[in-house]
Image (tube, rainbow, N blue to C red; front, side):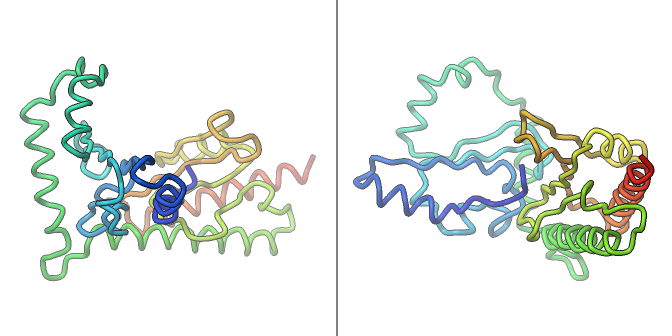
Amino acid sequence: MDGDVAKLREIVEMVERTLPRGTGHVVVDEAHSTGVLGPQGRGLVCELGLEDRVFARLHTFGKALACNGAIILCSPLLRHYLINYARPLIYTTSLSYPALAAIRTSYRLLPLLGQQEGEEDPRTHLFNLISQLFTSLTALVDTDSSSNADGDIRTLIQVPKTCPSSPIFAVQTPEPRQLAAFLQARGMMVRAVVAPTVAEGTERVRVCLHAGNTKGEVETLVDGIGEWARGRAKARARL
């Protein structure tokens, strides 16, 4: 929810140390890392070289791959067990042939991204956008809070202290629904996330960047957040 990445290597080492002789198992949900992290977008487990130390991995075909469905990478024994005992799997309709063709095409394209001359790797572009959003929002909060005579916008907007490691960006605010509605009215697809989905006091507007976004769109988002925050700070100062 905060755009952070699990300390997977430390988790695996702790499980192996605490539960020796194969009595502990680590299962990793790679939904948000598929197509983004690791070599050729293979995920966090591959990025850290932990393929032989993780019990099972779930990769979605949605999100970065723009398809539907998912797959579990596991041992033959676990595969056999799931096929025979996992009721949601047993009673789920199989993927259609067009869906399977789309998934295969996405996987064939992943290694080719950014390989043509003059073409930027979408993953590189995505992480540049993440850095841009973090830098611009941090500058907005620091600059406006020190120069705005109508009120401190830091009471309305909080950004992460460090740059997120994923495209999920949380803009914390005590008025998430109002900020989300303001940005949505200007054509930006963001969502308010409130308690009990997150702890009280950490309500936020959730921004999910993707490689199709442009630097200009990120600046438009930052400008919109700044416009809303300055307006609300001014209104509060008049009360």
